[in-house]
Length: 358
Ligand code: IPM
Ligand code: MN
Image (cartoon, rainbow, N blue to C red; front, side, top):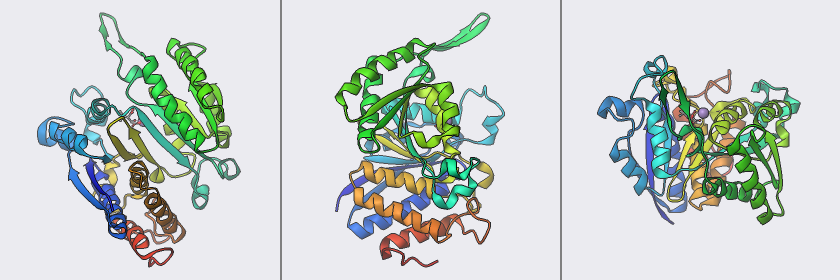
């Protein structure tokens, strides 16, 4: 077995409950395969502000830096939502984490699970078989450009360097090589200079990946195409803010936000996080869906080179869907609690294919 140091940042709302189940599942994998996973915990978000005044305390950053990879639950609290000008905010913890650790590639896979197609707001035949992944640049662009106020206005600058574009472009092309060999660059090259640079760089890099078909789409059109024909996409590559917007749009296609994982990858560090937020109304009730976090843990296993283990986790998640061992967001009939979903998946891993109790 291998030994890995895993950071855990449960965060706010349902974050602690869903990360607990992911750790349970990782423990089952460790037990079965003789691996040693050592966990180190850190506070982030509103809970960290309450305790220390800082949404990302230094100790938390140190936990992440010392880890081979880390899990992130969710951040956010209603007391900040109604006050967008609050100076210290939970989101700052996340943005600082991305920037300090150089987590430049945000990977968001979108899968339409057959058993959940009826929950999609889109027509079933449009959605069935949709399966793509968004590569969103995460540490550049308008999020991190110079921002400020002038006497009578405000500004947010968007800048990108060749280096920032190239490094995520290579990851996206490599992902396409391992999938259906299609890469869609999403930009606004009819208007923005940064987008024109993205086109130039990505088109040049495409020569190194002759087996991948590169196309480009303006972001407004892409937003429409994603609803009209989501099956056309394989790998989508885009800059920070466009990626923020279209990945939220993409997240509703499959019918459940509760199943979508993500990875934020850098040169030295990698973070794994469910797409859904902190859902404060559901906190402490044992009703939160842990599957997105468990699937994020599967992405973590892939990242750590534990490919078979990641497959086992995904198979166990599929078994929980098949057996109706799911939380109330996914079924009206006999939903089970957050903890029981995790128990089922952990047991399924330990006891092998389809032997989990239901
Ligand atoms: C996301 C979130 C963040 C973002 C917020 C919380 C800063 O919306 O991870 O997509 O805009 O990147
Ligand atoms: Mn977002």
